[in-house]
Amino acid sequence: MTDPSGLIDPDVFPFRSGALWTSLDDVAENARFCRQTGQSVGQASRDVHTTWAGLREHYQAPEGEDLYRTMDPLKISGDQEWEALDQAGGLMDTYVEELMPVRQKLAVLEADAAEFRSRVRSGVVVTAQDIALGLSSPLMDAVLSPEAWPGDGEPERRPAEVPRRREQDQPDR
Image (cartoon, rainbow, N blue to C red; front, side):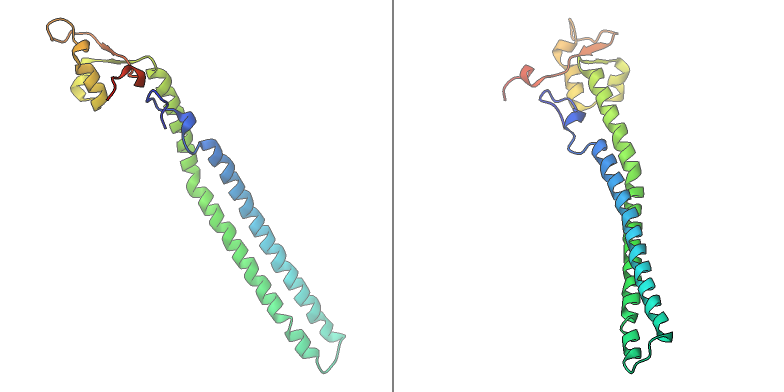
């Protein structure tokens, strides 16, 4: 997630917030589609069952009741499919709701990383207060190096300019 010089580079993040925006929108659309499909299947199976049940008044035969009973599983399976697809749509909606804040936070982190990168591109100014609060090891090493302290090794009472280290500036190991 860094460029060759070691700086954070949001352009090389493995997963960008823009991709998450698109994928979450797709999941939300699929949730709607699942629910609509489930409702269509359930309603169609009920309509067929109701139509067949209405034939009882007009169709009389010895096998008639057997024929009508064979339609019961259609209604039951249609209702089960409706329920399953509705539940799947609900789970997808929950997934989207859970990831929505993550997507927003990722976008903020990307913007923060880009802003930080542009701010430190040419180095960092470190104050005595920063040193007293304790900085990360690489920055402390740069601040405490002999090049950062002029003259007799005593610190001056001014901010120190800490250049950003580049791979090409570092000695071979």
